[in-house]
Structure formats: structure tokens, C-alpha cells
Length: 329
Image 1 (cartoon, helix red, strand yellow):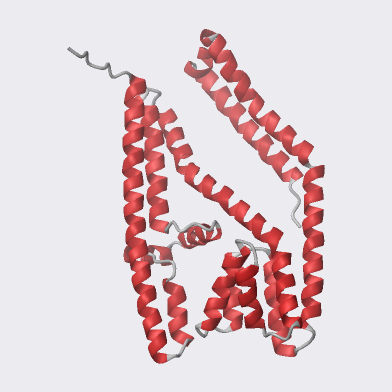
Image 2 (cartoon, rainbow, N blue to C red):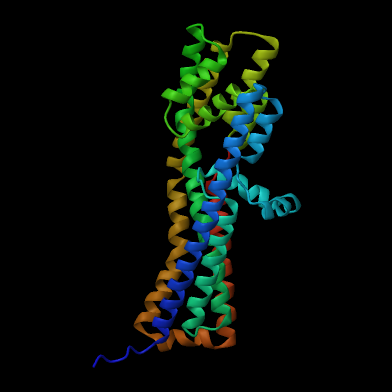
């Protein structure tokens, strides 16, 4: 006969974590599937109306408003809580197709999984609260990293897109045609953003609104300068190709300078990482080698107070080093 498996606290924590994780994944995928179905249906109906009326004004604005595919129950909350609108904008900048409802479900599930796992291990309510906070932060940190990488890739390829547009204008094409060429030939994620601008122009959206929409999606000063240059040239005239040449040169110089600056501050950033993680690594090593020596730090009230103070000072020092080694351009 097969023996029964003993349910140790570690096994209970693992089962609780896996159960909550799978349930969260299922709920998030269900919400995302509903969002995509609503989004496709809305886009199809709006395109049919555009094809019938051939008038891209209010219909295009409505199409842009529905692009996010938010569920109906979330729209009132989005209007009342500005932070939710900022979070939706943050997800768009990361380049993900994940909707706001699915992201909130993923965050809640990750928090519950982290808290229940530590609670099942018998570590107490404070540890479970800490685990829930860390679990809730993990999805946001992952999308934050993805957003930074996407914006960095856009900034690296943006001068090439401007050069493509400049060559198109010098060849005698219009601005909208040049934007279409950039959408076809540029590298991602630049091509995707210009493709969206080009499609909005095709459906009748004014150039200033399309460029403002791209500036909102890509919160980089170079994009705002580019949009401003196009709009000023449209209103007052001038040599747009020459303006774009100068803009491309300035963006390249700023990008080169930023990379040189990161090279010069690399030692400071590495020092911050070492000073920030060394105490935790040393403490974990001492706990593994001699648990009785470290146990009063977790069991005694004065030990927990000193531990919390030390962690707070470590975080403060890490933030200060990051602020010193980060230069905004």
C-alpha cells in the first residue's frame, strides 16, 4: 500500500502558492479574453461606420477612445481615480496587450499568493503582510522593466526614423506618406508607433491629434520636440527636411552623451548595489551557519526593532546612491 504524504508547512505553502497562482492566471486570462473580444467587436463596428460615412472626425475619436477595450464596470472607476488612468497609460507604454482589469487581477493574485505562502509556513502576520506587499509589487516591477527597455529601444532607433522621413520629404513626398514609409521600414518599436499615427491619419484624425497621441504614449522629450517641429512647419512653413536633419543630429548627440555618462557612473551604481545587498547576503550566510546566533534578532522585540531600522537605513542609502548616480537630461 502506498503511504500517505505528510503535509509539512513547506508543502502546504507550496500548494497554497500554486493554487492561488493558477487561479490568478485563469482569472487574468478570462478577463483578457473578454477584453479582446469586446475590443475586436468595437473596432469592427467603428470601421463599418467609417466605411459607410467616409467621415473620420467624431468616429475616429470614438475609435481611439475604445481602443483600450476597458470593461464597462471599470470605466467609472477610471474616471473617479486618476491613478488608474495613469496605470493604464503605464501599461500602454510597456507595449503589452494586457488590459487594466487583467493587470489588477494579476496583482491581487500575486499578493494573495505571497501572503498565503508565508502564512502557511507559520511565519506570522507581519511576514505574510510583507510577502503580500512584495507579491503585489512584482507585476508592476516586471512591466516597469519592460517599459524602460521599450522606451530605450525607441530612443535608440528614433533618429533613424527621422532620417527616413527626411529622405522621403526631400524626394517630394508629403508628411503623411513619409510617416507611412517610416512605419514600413523602421525598426520596432518605432515602426509600431508611426504605424498607429499613419493609420489615424488615414481615418481622418488631424495631424496635431495624432502626434499628440504619440507624444502621450511615448513620454520622451525627443518625441515632443519632433511633434512640435512638424506642427510649427505646417502652420508657418519652412524647410522641414533641414529642421529634421538638425533634430536627428541633436538626438544622436544626446544619446551618445547619455551612454558616456552611464559609463562614467557605472562604478557608483555598482557600489550602490554591493552596499545594498551585501548586508542581506552576510546575514543569510550567518543564519545558515549559526541559526542560534541570529535567532534573537528575529525573536526579541529589540532585535526586530533594530532589524527594521537597519533595513530602512539600507533602503534610504540605496535610494540616495541612485539619485546621485542618475542624471536627468
